[in-house]
Image 1: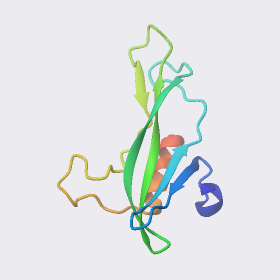
Image 2: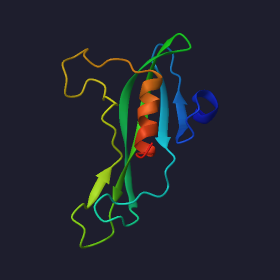
Image 3: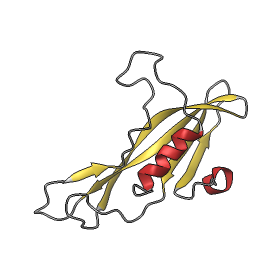
Image 4: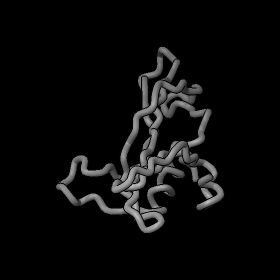
Length: 123
């Protein structure tokens, strides 16, 4: 669906919450199925996913929030010092975390594009 709407094939919309009076919540995840450990290059194993709420611009005239189901990976190589790691992109900002209230800014498509960078670190 993201590929169709905004041309980002590395991001999948996994659900939408549309509760009356609330911000539209769009749940997304990266589509990467094979990730190498940055420490040793071994194929990492999926450990779990944690939702990260990101501020976004209004969609269809309503406030919107992206919920990124951020993946945590584990390196299976016992000698590797990395252990576990998460998808990461410094351009995405969490909503209201680690900053003064109200300082998080909307990102719109920039938020989705930053997630695209997390899924494709070389691009």
